[in-house]
Amino acid sequence: MPVKPIKLTFEGAHGAELAARLDLPTGPVKAYALFAHCFTCTKDLTAARKIAQSLTLQGIGVLRFDFTGLGGSGGDFSSTNFTSNLEDLRRAADFLRHEFAAPKLLIGHSLGGAAVLAVADSVPEATAIATIGAPADVGHVTHNFDEYLSDIERDGQAEVSLGGRPFVIKRQFVEDLGKHSIEKSVAKLHKALLVMHAPMDQTVGIENAGRIYDAAKHPKSFVSLDDADHLLRNPDDAEYAANVIAAWVKRYLPADAQEVPEIAQGVVVRETGLGKFQSMVIAGQHRMLADEPENVGGFDSGPSPYDYVAAGLGACTVMTLRMYADQKKIPLDGIRAEVRHEKIHAEDCAGCATEKVQKSGKIDRFERLITLHGDFTDDVRKRLLEIADKCPVHRTLEASSLIVTREVST
Image (cartoon, rainbow, N blue to C red; front, top):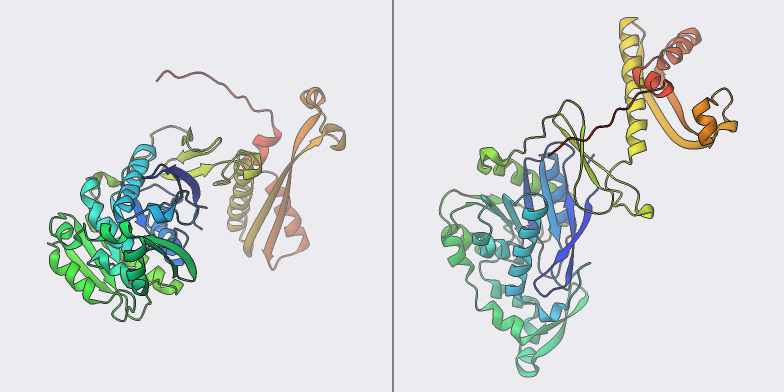
């Protein structure tokens, strides 16, 4: 199951706070990708979410954000243009580079595709670019408000309806479009390029894909999105696009793109620098997040410390029962352990008021609910529950453990 996206913010081109989401894989991060959404869309469009989720399954972390004045980002959309969009993208890449690692993959949807092509030279670490339904000429975007162009030219601006929402488009926005040549940017790309487009795209015609492809030098690839619509509203189309990108980009990730987990004898936990509590948990090749719920100041981007303790008890219980059942040839078809944690007053816990508990007045209570699936007798069932109490983590929690703390110089 994908990790819950992390909510982030960074400063955009006009100084506004831009809203972002970082989708991370549950294991080691092989590389990071930066995703640019379509014109007047947001980072939370179905296509953006699906693509990010699918890429995380391939070990790729994805940063997606709302351009200035859109979605959850601050700022005035009417004061933006394609040039400011490019600066938003550069700042997103800088943020990713500073906080995690520079993006190796740039992905752009529609006008966002044109944007990643135009900004690619500004992200030297990026080795691969993928576009979805991108226009070869950014001026193409004016077809969304053709009927208002004369009003914009005459009055300097006009309120237009895009996707059922009102937007103010100013003359400077239209004039700025003419300053950019996507085909020239593509010709000097010197990065691997994947062009994805639906032949029946009614918003950005398939001829745009041909122009981008022809302008590019090898290595370049084209993949048809068949009967998908421009926004990839069908989740299956979005997932297909994501899977193709994930498979294609593996060839173009440099050998050092794979992050090497910290080598340690035990588990390493370090702050991510994001939020108040968020920490990265590294156990061998496995990477996870620890956090606290939002109502206590966290992002809720990962289990809490006590959730991890409960998970350890639950996992140990299931594994211990499986080992015993296999050894004794017990037809145990499935095991489920639910662990709940709470702090209770010592007087409410008969038989557990040790000297330490008496001083604190509280004790940690773990309730373990075990479900056993299989055809066996009540005596066997009773014995299995006894074995559950013998799992090593259970014994550790019930015993008095010794914790030694010492500072390690850096």
